Length: 277
Image (cartoon, rainbow, N blue to C red; front, side, top):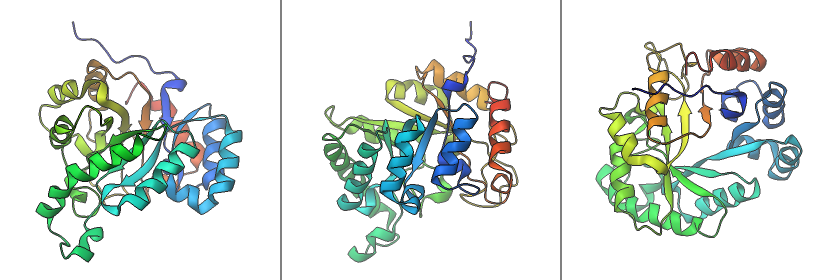
């Protein structure tokens, strides 16, 4: 008998700050979520810095919310940048630091700009170093593969299979998990088998929808239910793999939802919970 996805409650719902970044600043985004009864979010470094780290921390401490993650650390930006993200993650008490490879810009100084093979040769070493640095913090790294359309600018790891190969090769002492994003991976083959293999390494589960007429590489993600991704099937797969953590809505929508009042956007997300994702 095939089990159905669990019935989500508000406490199972996490809405990333970035989903409201077109309408809200750091403080207002938290207020909108809190007023809607949503207690979980993912914090976004640019929003923290725009507000100011000290002021953001003061606001966060009074919000009474839970931070599922901080987004995002880029491996190719180097150790100094990674330590900065780890410091922020620790300061705000987040559960995971979502980590991507980053693009090729950081390789220009070594004469390897745009050399994907060279970038891939660095990856295992950079991820291992990141894991070693994270050992002294109260946060886990959640490595996130992204859609191939952003291979040059955001991540050279474009499939769950690639991510699993890298993590399988790491020493057991390196505590690195996975952030699974439906928008990035919905097109991949044999997902159930790969999710099962990921198992308890799945630390974060991000949802949004792929629009057939998507207009922007990053900033035109769809509201769950508006696109082509079978998100209910996705949740059934990921729960079958053992993940029963929060479902994290992460929508970048410059020309659609970010032109809608934040409160309306949140109402739609809550209305579609369990029916569309």
